Image (cartoon, rainbow over all chains, first blue to last red; front, side, top):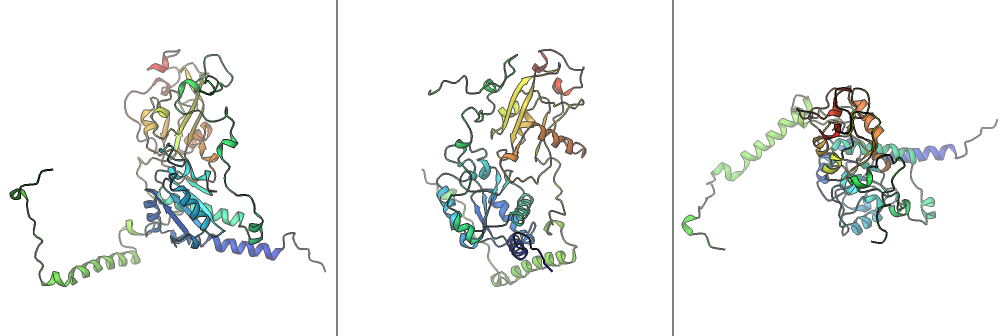
Length: 211
Length: 203
């Protein structure tokens, strides 16, 4: 009597699921708290919201012991090498939560000094909007991340060794052409259509090139 | 910098500690009594609700009704978008997270309407200045608070998404609570009541 096994192998996939289950229920956060979102991270870890209910209460400030980076707060250009170094120091099954408007997109700090979204430098798994987000939002993000960990799994060592290309987001400039790049909001001169002109106005058409 | 005159300096002496205060035991015991009281209250469930764990995904927090959460774009009674694409919200926005492309309105009661209306929810700081700036009460902030996203693209809320937020939250009846009383713009009136033609957007 023949028993046909699935392609992946039943036992190994089940072992992967068990490993993912273990990983998602014992996330060790590394709170990269640089601003007021860090206060909400502390509130989430405190007794009222109690992130220990989801197994993520072991905040460690050594990146070697962590597998979840919570970037809470704005990251300036001078801080970015530190952030990247800490991210590289974390052992490999690792995830990243970008918490708050500043970490996710720069927020109100649309300046040359502030990184406009850490996802240009780190692979971010879950984004949390808000300024700052509520602790419930962080708990919801941890729940989303647990679902993602269970669904997508992690790299094993062999796959990790095969990786030669850096992962993470590509630079924004390679994805968008010049005409597709977003017009500065509140610029009513270039974003309002003129009367009777139905096709899309190229926002850069009126600008002189190389000015 | 001039020195303060000695007779103007008020010297404060520390209070004299008695024997009990010097032993620190009464204050330590009273502090422990507070901790013990809260512990008993938590264990028996009779204590202050504010110091008990809020088991979030099952138990929702009671937010104040003026909480500023995810935006929505309101519809007028005919189901059209209320916005008149006046760019007041995107001008008032301190984070520059609102992007509007206006087009000539297909309806007679306004000049323009937003062809696209995109809010970057990740850049927004939920300050509520957009709804204060809106002359026709078209944009409002709801009490939806637990928004998360797995990518940056899905957090760019376009017009359809913002209108669907309105469809979801309008049944609750709690929003709006911050709409300013007073005279609204003509685009917020029912059809026919407002002016027609090019002068409508000026009032």
